[in-house]
Image (cartoon, rainbow, N blue to C red; front, side):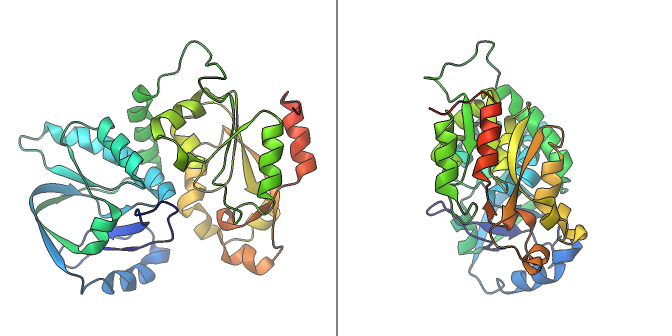
Length: 316
């Protein structure tokens, strides 16, 4: 059973959550969200029903939200797609992806015919009833991320020779190019470009190509939020992260801070070097209500200019 979840910038690929129900019971990820998830699932009960014949393996929860898809599921897809092949009559693993290009990359990474990849819209159109289903355990984010980096590494080999500027960007600023994330976005992008950086929106590039660029880049800066997951997938050298000031983020409830982005970022704690920014709206109420990664930031251009110059990127 599926429902819309947040928003998607990719046309025809809605952001959704999907739940596996066995005898009317679903399995939530965190107690804090149990009540709202229960009522959200109930609203989907009257959808059309479609039967999916055959033998399948399913996870208790899926999402096409990029950050949670990478942080909670992608490693599990890659690992279970291989492990299930050891069975005499392996079930196909039902999967989802945040975009068509990521769906194609996922299929490429997994054994042939090991997956049944559905689009988010197909999930939304009906409640799917499975004839024979194996409900797999849910991995913790750290289990998922450890397996993910091991399974993905062979597809992203590091070149012994440094890549030329013509073949790949050597300095990268990863950015969704949405002003709701950075108030003074245009000025920030201009400043990075002036210092020889390529401003890349991940949705405009094929995943394998983008991840190789991130892996090889001599310098990487990144917008906070789900954008970081691109670096987490492939980066093994330090990088800079535009992040909300800890004076604001510390007010958010501690029991919610590590759900999602907080626990994902902790996986790269030794690589992330924060560049702290002020919120666009200085509000104690918003500090307590919005997750720190949801806050719109204002980047101090003078300090950013100093940091970029210190890296050796003189203005062009």
